[in-house]
Image 1: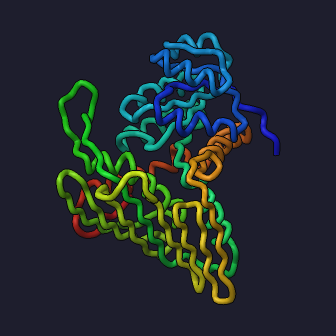
Image 2: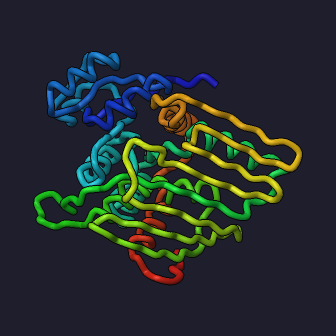
Image 3: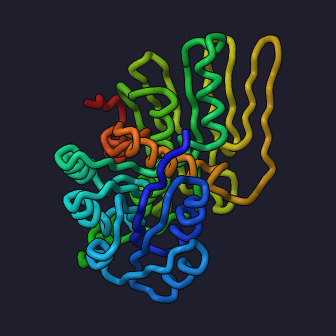
Length: 330
């Protein structure tokens, strides 16, 4: 179905935004009306590539002058919390990168404002929309796959640096915590999307030199069990993603989320993609933005809505607690 393009403003033009979300706009029914960015050089780089001539240093001025329906706000969670809340109160739908917020309490605040203002808030957990995960969900929907019995996810990075917890406060929240919130959060979300809600976890943590290694066992409400391998002791620039989903007599292996192996008793199926170039179709960023537009036009909750992602934040905070033994999730 052809969608009416969504008139959108964009706050932020840093390296992450220019590398991921701006290029993905080409895959989605989005009309970029204007951007807001304090750095003029960054702003002009974006203006030259992505087809809008409107640039503001003050987002409120952009809101006053432009006919905008929605905002993409690309900033760190601590910096964008007040921006997201203000944009919702001003009547805009909002699309944000992961994580939805720094804490479950902050994410809940956004969800409550979205409810009250009847606006859509979607979090760009783009791995839900990646080539491999889309194919895996199709296979799992086929009757021959049966019920999911077990899941495995491995998502490991190079070293993370610690950062200040709040602007203006000299508080070091630790590299391991930053890794969990900024990187591992993808798999807290993805494992829920594939396997359903998590009933309980058992998490073990090993920290060396400020970097973390986490072994997380999961028990899903469906009865399935799972394991997450998470650590920040590996290498940047290498393959981070591996997912295995076991059904009843069939299983799926996603390597890099672009290569899909489907094993069955009668025949195996392999889908490879050899591109090393990130793009919004393979990674899911373009599909994620399209889902945001579709949900607004169809007046429904999107996949990866702020309300759904509260479950992801609960799982993150349970692992962050680093408790040995089972942790029941409300």
